[in-house]
Image (cartoon, rainbow, N blue to C red; front, side, top):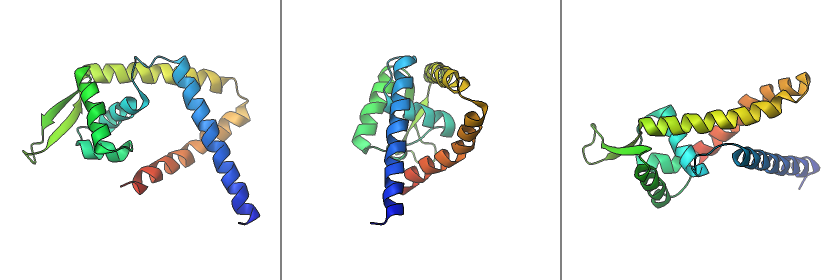
Amino acid sequence: MSTQSSASNADALDLVIALHRLVRSIRRSSTTRGLTPTQLVILAYLKDNGAARIGELATYVPCSQPTATTVVNSLQDANLVERIQDEDDRRAILVTLTKLGRAALRSVAESQATQLSQRIAMLDDDVRTQLADAIPILTALAESAVTETD
């Protein structure tokens, strides 16, 4: 293994650990309304993409279809999502966000955004600029991870 590859792997591991710790600390210090990370991912996906089949949600999360079904069941029990018939394929069922689901997601997102923006505000201007410049890169990495699981 080359030195550059080792350094890249070490940097990647450092990034994974830093992101994991950041996400966990934001979750701990913000309101999640009792929702799990997987539930939040599904609610956010439905908000951004509209109604979706269970398989599509499972691919996006990523998780197995049985896990996605269990998560959707819990969200439906809480009246945050509902199942509707697919107009294009009457055999298929779509999951869609309810008004209560939108409100819950908005509340959690606002709480988490507030927590993170308070932390970012404490950074120097140059560091904030570097962080802003990294957002498209991190977004592309996250999207490529979702695409690879398709």
